[in-house]
Each structure stands twice: as C-alpha cells, then as structure tokens.
Length: 299
Image (cartoon, rainbow, N blue to C red; front, side, top):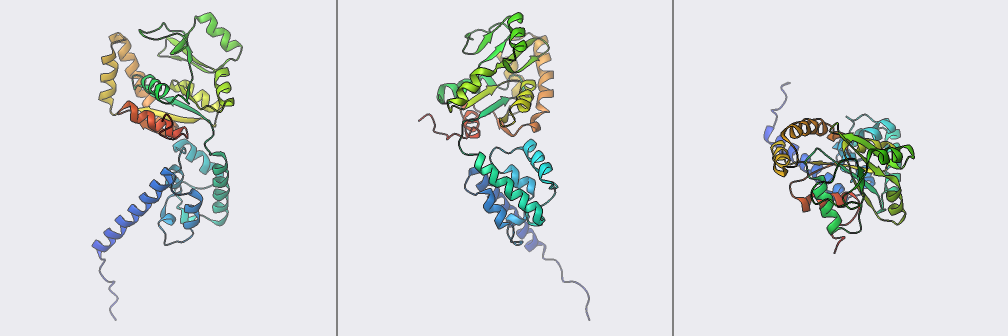
C-alpha cells in the first residue's frame, strides 16, 4: 500500500489563501464603512468555514469605527481574550463577553455630540486643519486654547488662542478651570478651558480639541470617552519642509522642534485613529467622520 501523501497543489493553495485574505479584507472594509454590524459578523463567525471565523479578534475590533490600537488592547484585557485569538476560536464565555460588549458599544455609539482630541507632531498642520473644519463645518465647536506665548502674525485673541500672562495662567490652574495644560518645547504653556467644552456638549454640539501630546494624555485620563486622533505628515521630509518653510522659528528653535517631533511621532499608537494630512480638505473630512458626523454636514 502506497503511504506517500499526494503532492500539494501549491497553485490551488495560493489561490485559496488570496481568496481568504480578500474575503477578510471585505468584511473589515464593510465594518469600517458601517455597512456591516459587528454583532452580525460575530454571529457569522460561529460557522468555522466562514471568512469571519478566520478574522483575528484584534483585526475585528480595529475595523469598528472609533476603536484604535489603545482601545483594542484595553477591551481585550477587560474581556480576558488573547490578541492572537480568531473569532472562530473564541470560547463560549469569551464569545458571550464580546457580544455583551458589542451590544453596549452600539447603544453608546449613536451620533451623539462628542469630543475629539487632535494631536500630532509640530508643523504637521493641526492648526490649518482645525481652521478648515471651523470654516467648512460650522456645527463643530473648535475649542480655543489658552497660551503664555505671544501671538504670531495673523492670530486673533479669542479666535486662535487666549493669550495670557503667567499669573493669569497660574490662576486658571489653581481654580481647576483647565481640562489640561502642559509646557511645550520647554518654553510656553498651553491649556484648554473646561467650561466652554461642557457648555457646547450640553448644547449637543461636538467639540474638537487641537492640543499637544502631553495635553492629549491628560484629556484621555479626565475624559476617557473622547476620541483620540493623531495627525501624521505624509513623510518625515515633508514635515521638515513644512517647519522650515513657514519661517516662524530660528534655526535653533527648528532643531528643538524637530527633536520633539520624533518623540511625538513615536506615540502615535496611543491614539484611537491616525489621519495623514496629505491634503487639508481630505484630512478634515476624515476627522469630521471620526466625530460621528456626515461628510456633507456643511451642505
């Protein structure tokens, strides 16, 4: 009796693997666009032959709008599910806990006004993107930060920043009137007044906070329901060109800001979502979508 196993059909196996990857990619894309409910995908994964069953639980969670790397890690830790698990390999209790989480997520995710925190490295264009959102999406309130630095050319008090002296900034800290505050580039202080944010949320108006990395971490602690968005440059060279091209800093200041930018870029995985600022309108549109608002909200 011939015990030699039949030869492997490598072409067929390769085609099957490609088809499986495409099927998983389709599921993830439909979840990301809202066309597929996470609960329905989880239910489909009970069929071991389905594409849903072969999805890693990390891929599954990160395909859900507004769930990024940090939230995924926290959710899996809370649910007691290993990141290497696939949906089809979940135990009964794990599946039940995940289903319960998804039901709660759906209830809390309707298009309610929300706070979105926009951070990123120096010169990435956070201010430019925020101004575009202010001009084209008037339903969004752009939080105005307080700072101890002097105004740059064209900046307006109360629109771009509240320009404060050191004593007044100290008073706001002492009276707990700042949601977050930090010293940036080892020189100036920036902070976010708490009151206006709460007022606009009470009026059912979403709020965008454009702040630095230190401030974003403080907001995450004080307001965990906020969505954390990291704005990226198309490339490191483009970031350098933008910083040098704006001509607002001395060469020494430019070197210091670029060193800080490298540290800031290393923190991007702490955020729920990343948006590349290749063009301002496209980046702004993506941020508005992450706020839970329609693209054409300004129409």
